[in-house]
Length: 310
Image 1 (cartoon, rainbow, N blue to C red):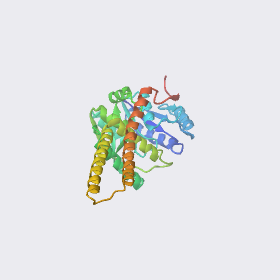
Image 2 (image 1 turned 90 degrees about the vertical axis):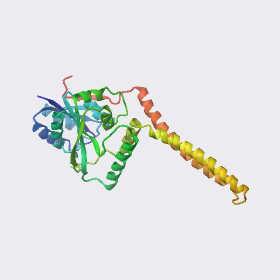
Image 3 (image 1 turned 180 degrees about the vertical axis):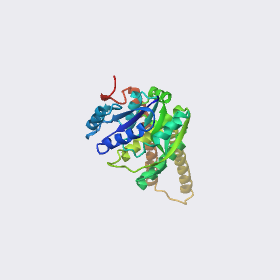
């Protein structure tokens, strides 16, 4: 019988972790496959770790990895994938806004021969207009910037075959953008569309700051176009400066426009400096990511394992 590993990142989810476990267990019991539930505690500061220990003690199919601190959602997914033993690996968030029943459809597609089955959000319930708008803009901007075809309106909810999971585990990136890496590795992929539910309890752990960090990781990891933009901005600024000075000089010589030189030149210098800082910031973001990779530090540290054989 096939083994399916379900990886569940957890961060401060004490209000719904027991409910999530029960619903996932019910779904996987009906799947007709053997399975393991791998909960990855990403440095939670509430009662999530102790609740997960209790779950693992009462359910032999449940396991827990606990980080030494909060390393981030993408690192939690990576750790669960690395410790998984399944012939297929499913990634789903603990809040279960992505309905676990969709996993059954993913398993069917996997049996048909697909290596990657990703969930595509047809509708998103209970989310603000701002969140919907920014998500829509981000996916379209990322698609326009990258050379890799990353499906729009998708998150990390997906099924990966064992061979795809093994390839993902071999990739050395520290600033990991999972959905981009899955698209990059290729293999046979398809979508399963579903309606994303409202949160049952608690609040989203993806703050605006974390969403911006995820967005920049995705763009920097899969596109050099921002660097080209910075270079183009420099060329544009230099050309505009030269044109401005030529036109201003001609108008002054013709007596059409008496220029207060310091005022205009000072304003233009400030504008040029603003463009320069934008360019430096873009280059700095790339250099920062290169520094992270060069340091070679592990991108997560496991403090505790519960339910694993080793």
